[in-house]
Image 1 (spheres, rainbow, N blue to C red):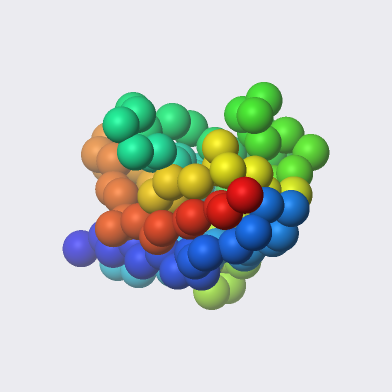
Image 2 (image 1 turned 90 degrees about the vertical axis):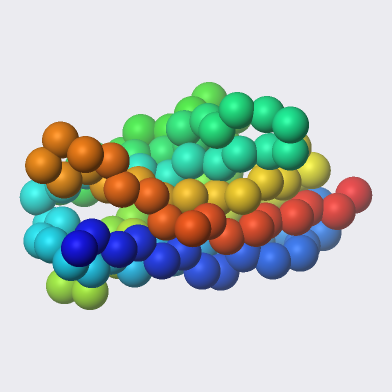
Length: 115
């Protein structure tokens, strides 16, 4: 059973930083791309960042240059370092992995950025 557990969210002032983590279990993830998404209140869930099995990364334009995704395959963990946060970054952040043609999501971690 694939499980993803996010952590590291919280309340931060604009301009601050947070580091999110996603711990994965139940399968081998080293060969899988890993994703971060977020969902702001009243909005659809949107893709934020991805990291491939070989460490290549890609980011949504809104976070490029401020967020950094990384992974530790030995620990089955993916991180999202978020710097220069602004109020538009507020939302619930989710990690995702696809295994056997199915998408698995964590429960999410709340990020709130105050002005």
